[in-house]
Image: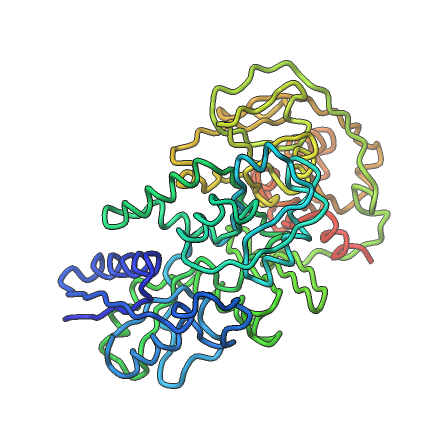
Amino acid sequence: MRVRLLSRASALARLQTAIVECALRAVHPSLITECITRTSAGDQDQTSPLWKLPTKGAFTADLSQALLSGEADVVVHSYKDLPIEMPEGSSIAGALPRADARDLLLVRERVIEERPDHLRVLSSSPRRAWLLGEAVPPLLPWPVKSVEAIAVRGNIETRVRKLIEGEAHALVIAKAALDRMLAAGEAFAAEAATLRSYLSECRWMVLPMREFPWAPAQGALAIEIANGRDDIRPIVDPIVCRNTTAAVDEERQILSARGGGCHQALGAAVLAKPFGRVISVRDKDTGESRWELRVARPSFPRVTADRIWPDAGATVPVDRMPVSAGRPATDGWWIARAEALPVDWTPSPDTLVWAAGTQTWRRLAARGVWVAGCADALGDERPEIDVLAGRSVAWTRLTHAGVCDDDAIATYAVSVDLPDDLPARSHFFWTSGELFKRAIARWPSLRGAWHASGPGRTRDAIIGELEDTTRYGVWLDRASWEKDICL
């Protein structure tokens, strides 16, 4: 059978179609495919700001019409370009597995040397323009008083070239788009080489999901087919990712509930993790700022504040003392806490620094450290930045004494005095697996209490020690746990 795949004419659009084509051929070896392109109305108008373009389908309507007229069998879209209401006669069969959906900030090296207190950033997105001023200044390693968004149009290569030519200090683009272009095969080698040469003149940071949620459906590829094409749907169904499709559907529902347009300053991100679905929403118009975990967890009984530990709203006294350690030989430093980076260690320009969360990131930035990104306090999985870095990054975790992993170096020791009345408490939120182990070793009866933690290694340590895991739950942070638990 022959299937015609239609997309926009840009290099990125053609590459995305090639990704779909490769996936189809992997499950249907005898399938004959043909890739065709069409220029959309949004592509033809390269001068108008994005907010002046039609609110529905500026980059997709022409392609959908070609599908309905029989010129193509499948249309491949960047999912975030699609309007909430699809044209009558077609539908989305689903999405492919999603690439990294986060936004990426590129800053020219010369700018970092000059340290301007007013940062001019290329972006035509209302969402990015708003969040740049809200979230980015404390993530930079020099004081920035204000951020200005400068409108920019064009494909990925054009926008990065405009940055390099000095039209602004920085640029925000979708990491997924740049990753795909840099990792493209021989057919796109020239474009990839050009982008790689531009990147050599910049430093970059992957913007955090919590403070900088992506545009609904960013990073996902949508497969559009005409209704009634019972011959096409069985062909594309095997390459559809159900998890990605479900996450994108939820993001688009959030957008739809607020009017459903790309002209809104709204970020809505849904991320499936092994411990549940993480949701980040920031909406300029309503002032909503949501950081939420949806997970099936045991129904914890609610209690008065005197039954929980740590005490509600209180800071646990912790002594963190530096310990002597040799500098890592690796080119990636994963920083558990700001204190984990010794004050006399200065990362080289080739060293990539990754923070556990944005609090650690901000504290490191205040010390003048360029941080490439963070794990959003969702665990310490390997950062997805090898493509950007142009190499396989070897990581060393800088953390506290007591962590025995092969990839860890202890740069500080922790001392915490557990209160003697701990056995009188019933609900606990742990920020350290080692502290949890110390507590149950001293008071074995605590195994029968209700335990909670954030995601990551603390969660793994607790689950590994508890015989009855129905009395354990994961929350994104201690504040959300207190809100759910305290009467």
